[in-house]
Length: 353
Image 1 (tube, rainbow, N blue to C red):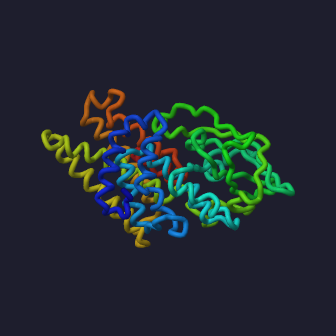
Image 2 (image 1 turned 120 degrees about the vertical axis):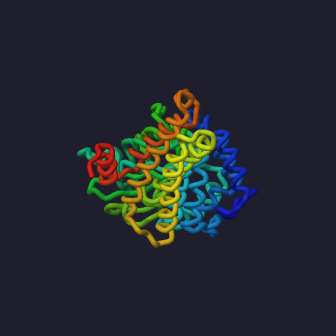
Image 3 (image 1 turned 180 degrees about the horizontal axis):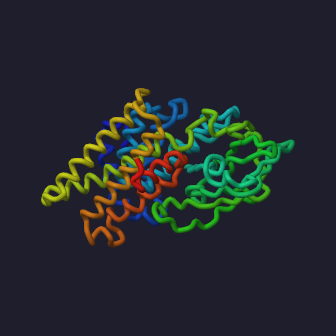
């Protein structure tokens, strides 16, 4: 059962299965969910046909992510990190790297993830880079750690970023079975604990030149190679979460008149935001990516809390989806969240116009 487009009816079956498994994904690594996605060809959506992918358009990818994230946000978040690694490998400057790695990644036989947050948001305020690279005759030697790596203990490889002594940055593929690579037991998060996101240590790890993805170069993460941090996908996943919460509210409103008006208003906001996501994906954006992210963050937070209020005490019992949505919505305040977006959300919370 390969899903060939967002309109393929088989996506409904996959999403139903993910939704049933979503309560498990709150705490446990979503191995079964990821297996199902591989079986259905989900990983093919994002990659070029030359590597066995389906090369979906940006609009189709938004549609796919909306469906997946409304069903299980943990699984969908893991996929964003997985595909972030794959797309950076596709865009690599190193000949043969993609040919060597992509065949097993596109099918789901192997799993890769990214360790790049320290080059974009986490730890950039520190005087010394948390992960350094030194050039040697046969490659680059890495020392330090990557603070936020999703599923490192389950990955076959990690696309990790490091900083050279002159400030230039480099992206490399590190095999997780390499001596000196160690995934630290991740902390229990407020939400998406099942993503197993945490620190990965690299102690005196020599990466050969044929495993360099890009660089060394200045501001490598903003050079247009592969998937950029943040951007449209984070807003899409936030909107998917809001969609699930508002759908719950709409169902409850069918037999509770007090929920009708809130349901209608939030449903209207979801539709407007989804329309804006598709316009942006089509190159017809009417607002900036940052403005879109502010709206998506706000809606995810408000919609999830509305679902909890509708669920009353039931929603506050661990395992109820409304409570889980509230926890997951908080994630968008910290996941690849640019400071201007956070400032705008803070002003909204404080009632500042």
